[in-house]
Amino acid sequence: MNEELKKFRMPAEWEPQKSVWIAWPYNKNDWPGLYKFIPKVILEIIFIISKSLKVNLIVNKKITNIKKLINSNKITNIKFHNIKTDRIWLRDSGPIFITNRKDNKKMILNFGFNGWSKYSNYKNDNKINNKISKIFNLEKIDPIIKKNGKTKKIIMEGGAFDINGSGSILLTEECLLSKTQERNKDFIKKDYEELFRKYLNIKNFIWLKKGIAGDDTHGHVDDITRFVSGNTIMTAIETNKKDKNYKNLSENLKILKESKNEKGKKFKIIKVPMPSPIYIKNTRVPASYMNFYICNKKVLLPIFKVKEDIIAIKIFKDFFRKKKVQTIDCSKLIWGFGAIHCMTQQEPKI
Image (cartoon, rainbow, N blue to C red; front, side, top):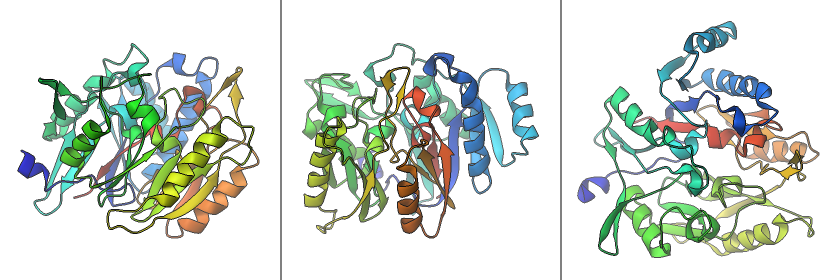
């Protein structure tokens, strides 16, 4: 299988997609006091994406009602799947697809999911990939590593790393190397690099330091820094020196400026401001424009009803000239500590 894996890679998000996976929201505890607003936001996201890309929608309760809702909003290009879930954040619990276009093959990397080593209700989410594998008769691989004489299944979330499709990866030390919310006990950089080298054919590792304030994942990279082309990186910056994010994001920017791609060339860095701090019920939430999602013809950009929205929109429209940038008001969705990228998982074309 090792030799076989060398033929596979994880395509970048901007490469052609066959579909996107989304889960319908049921967990009212994820948005205390605001849940009633959430289905409408998810519906808007599904509507926009479905215009140019097939949506695989995971539902597990009141399927007839949800189908009626989808139909009443004239949404087509959608397929329903009855799979139990705990939360909607499929970027972390859903399938990571790897492809071998030469042999016309696609497989699922079935990482273990344990609720970000924070929450106890994750068992349904940890079974999602098994169900998808059976539905489509797709081969799945459980990534493992041998450590201290034992073979262990790897815990990993899709939001913990970002790739450019040609051998480079973005990660944070806070998420993967901290003892807080430790996903894989006693793992060091070498272990993670071995993992990504083996299963994603990564050659070039860019380790950033920390994520943003309010992030309950403890440092996911998809809230702070993202590849937008093979050699271009968008990264969040904070200009207010008194803000909690200033030091960490400044340090990350310095690392990015010194980093190189898999061919030894410097990256083009696009700086995107953080939105003004957002608090819901006296809790700071991890609002960030970096939690966008790129699909075939569009880029879905989260906005938060703050003054920085207009700046972020211009930056995205200036860069994504061949795609339509569509904004989604995520000022309530973010109360679940996630936004558009967190709730989507693309399936690449082969």
